[in-house]
Image (cartoon, rainbow, N blue to C red; front, side):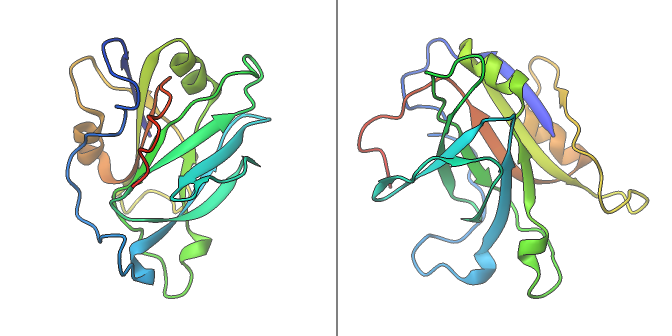
Length: 186
């Protein structure tokens, strides 16, 4: 995973995740089962996660949370239950960039793992923008299961471009201290 932090000042509320690179992927209408990628989102002890739907926010649930997301579509999450700031919430955006190649009928056994750690949360609560790109390594000598690791990209480098040099980007998470604009659900 790659993390990039930049100041969030000057951004208008609700703008995080509003613009991004166009990614191949199906439209939500007529979604085929092959277009859904299971995703596990986890974080520190006490983290609660909710996802925005057309009907509003789902109930907060304790992490880890596993859900199926349509490839190429951005989803807004609500994070709460931070030990350092229990009254605060964050509204990250998560987007699956590619589907993992799992054996037929076993996609739910091989989810994309997104880990939101305390450093990400602290940076976002302080006003920084945290962008994390999850990628699958293409090295045939790498074991099937590799512990999650991350690093910061250099200033001026794009996290997605760096991830492309290391493997296949499969998910992107953008965390910032922004409250979503009312009525911004698709």
